[in-house]
Length: 402
Image (tube, rainbow, N blue to C red; front, side):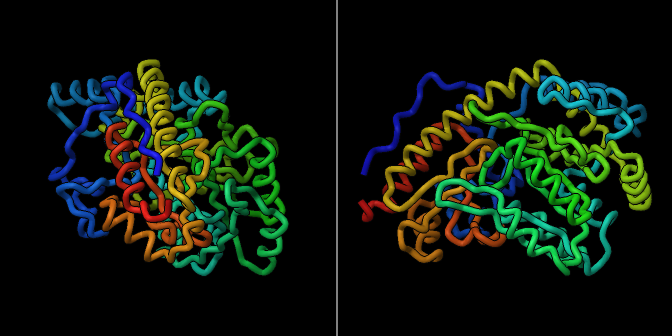
């Protein structure tokens, strides 16, 4: 079998640094043995979707200033936070966001839950385009709603839309809301303008509120262009957009998400539900967002994307050398969706080789809903030396296939 690609010695030292997260109450590293049986002492944690990189200095400097001040009372004016979101949307994505359209939630899983609670009733259907981020289904089911899985079409290389099949599923479905992951997690697709228009038209045909989770919008690789759903005509009266600094800057512990609703009627409904739940943001999260959405933060993100793109190339080349294993071409996100169907192995067999032989913890494809049986999701947001090590372990674990 082909050896793993050589480690790039010219990579960025900010991201090359190995930071030991074990023993820090880190889900990704401290729970992998309990969840997957991957030993803590020499296992590789490639499951939970946070990165092993420190955020840019502008974020830590902002937190340090708060600590130096030393008083952590109630926060008041959040104008700077809102304007940072507006600046980022305009500068990075050509998006116009009004100040009054922005709500702060405790992350986007919480934002999803509030959307479900606002626009559906127990027993109603919520549409997901599967396989997709597992927390959506978890929240929907916990709220007593029904998950309607509209399977994405997969040709063995690329995922696409099948609106005809999805339309047929809607008759009598009781669907009231749909959640779109854009860019998509776990398959890494960046939806085109035509595809986004198709999703918008689908929502209109079936009178669905369209929730567009765009948390991965900032990590997009060369040759691809992310378009906000808000750029599509005719969708504003049913659109809820969700963005966040959490994935982009690796600060998910801040638990802050941005929900943007330009339509006044939808906004009033969401605001009423927020008020009823007594939700307000924490001051640390507001300050981290303000600091991150800045020119310094933007420069850091550009470097991050270049680094992860290098990790992606190394990982894809290494996976391609294993007969029967394919990594779906990654257009965005730092999460690689790997197809093991060509090995002829059962799900239990290829998973055991990854977890027990290669000692790598990954997300099981079945957790992402329909269509995920033959897949595992690998997190590439880690030091490049660890990506190289992961490739070497995987090639060894499947070495008998050559």
